[in-house]
Image 1 (cartoon, protein in one colour):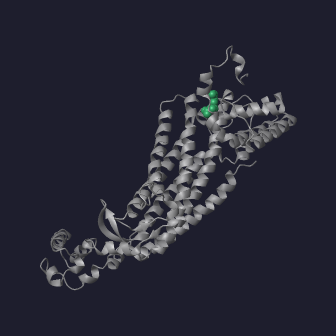
Image 2 (tube, protein in one colour):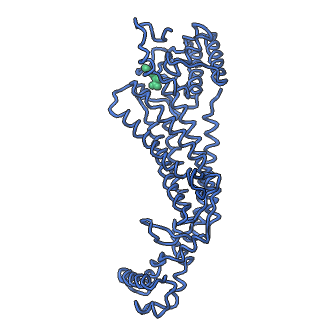
Image 3 (tube, helix red, strand yellow):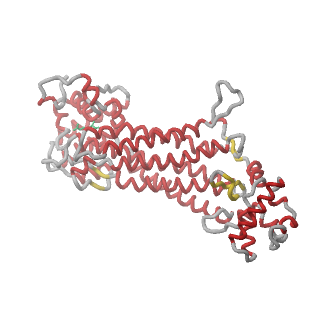
Length: 474
Ligand code: ARG
């Protein structure tokens, strides 16, 4: 079978070379984008008088037929035709004859493939912002239901200071809000048109790149033709954004795994999001949380993989760049899976308030507050720290917590203590005393929920607007 580029060759391609260099097995995922790009390109060729309207119409109809066949799952892709671009062109020519060969006028696969990647990624970036907003909704809802649930806050995984459980959940809301903003920002650099750069230098045909950009809904046209075909920064940015989302998810996963253990028993994950053991009948394992935590590795791998492919590549296109795809597709799939599961898993999670409260009652996480109390009585903080340290040590020896001590016992350590400390030591008091912007006091957390809801509403509106902009038009 002859190659679309076969003219200069006197020998058949080695079979192994054909298989080794082909990308069709994975880049067929770009079929819709490829046809979308070709439709805009051929329309422009007609508008600029580069092709007669009759040819444009034939090519357009042919492309739509090829698209229908692909959508029905009837298209056959062949490794001999290397990639999705040449497979589609070949099918177009089979469909409408030699006039199909005019589609590639004024274009190269180098600017074509870059355009496809931009079209593909912008659609998924919008999808991911949407998935993140659903996760935010689930987190905000749980936070609202846990505005009076007090839980130990940790540093070094040691009990540190009590906090509202809502406050802990809102920390994740803040992280995912940054992820949303990062994706939205990356969109600016994704939504740019490379087409018209040709192989590297532009084209001799009087094309109109801005027309193609507006047809495809791109906000900008690449300034420099070499950069247009060499740039994969936008994919790196996406992979980096995805890596941070996975970082955040994996931290949350780790906490869910801990919290759902019998030792903590702070939460119970819904049966629908857990699995059992083939041998131990009593087991209910947090597999989803573990697997999301585990899959973080491959997402980081895809980022480092692409950075390494791009490092030290000379301008402009090099075949190495074909390696940009599998990692990107894999990251898109992995992130979709994680985010689709996470929102309902969080929404259906049961919070064991009593158990959390019990934990708070049986710890020293109120120790900072009596130190602060002594400071209020005029003792320098460093001395107050020492006094409370000794008091805690005494408690440990006696098998008691601070609230169990009698006033006489407190007075052994400092005569500044009085009965007010019993109020100061109450977990509610400890929590509500941290009434600074961004702190855990109930009014602050309430206000944070308001801000989170506002930010999420604007992200949801963004998704609606950009879904319409990036939807495939055929
Ligand atoms: N399949 C190729 C890729 O993914 C398309 C571009 C090929 N260009 C070329 N000059 N061989 O990168």
